[in-house]
Image (cartoon, rainbow, N blue to C red; front, side, top):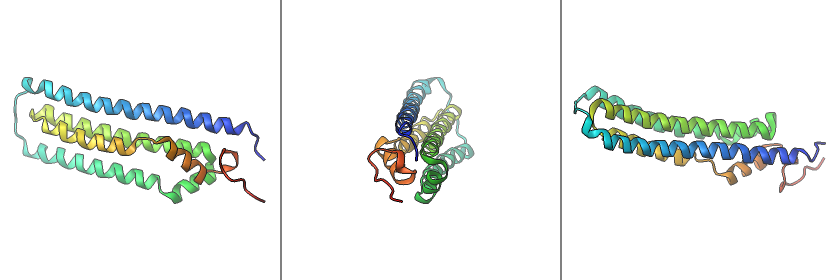
Length: 171
């Protein structure tokens, strides 16, 4: 039987990991907004150039990375996968997976915004930054860690004998 000291460890780890992940996602949201401001302010300093191949590459990259980030999150957060991780690694392993996947998706969103900004720098067309930022913000909002959802995942998928508000297992 596990000690009751494990309850505060899981709770404190949940709070710590969730707070760090939420701060990172919010920082990326602020960074995306700042890229839009920089693109708007730098437009008058850039010389307009047309490049059809760069145009298609930026648009396709933004689209593929946006869809890939959604597919990555849905795959990594599938019920069967989380159940296996919770059973094998316990609640701390499940928390690590939730944090790692959320950060991976958030970093993909940051990459989307950077690709759009790079397209703006090369062509002086601020549409790339704005389009990339809209997709990046949508992905970041989709990836934002909701603490109640993490708690529900812990109760559902981890060995819940050491979590509060969970039914006790009968032997």
